[in-house]
Length: 109
Image (cartoon, rainbow, N blue to C red; front, side):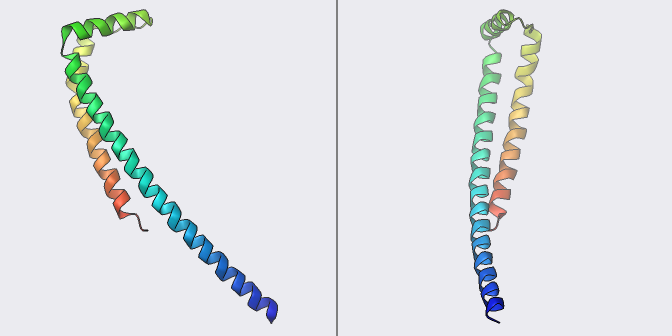
């Protein structure tokens, strides 16, 4: 019947639109994943920079004073320990960024 033919044509048209929307969504997801990976790499770089700054006793003293002004307590020993942990944390963050990029690359278009 004509109604069935029209309904089938409408269903095919809707399927085409759905596939186009899905492809666009996947492409957008790839872009967002890549941007997230870029942000993770930048964050890892900032962690390494902070680690280097924290090796400076004068910088640690400044950070202790700023924490005190905020009503927080942080010790020199805590900041020294943080300076030693940050590079490994940065490495892990970069590894996660690499994995995210790989997942983005595997997304179908």
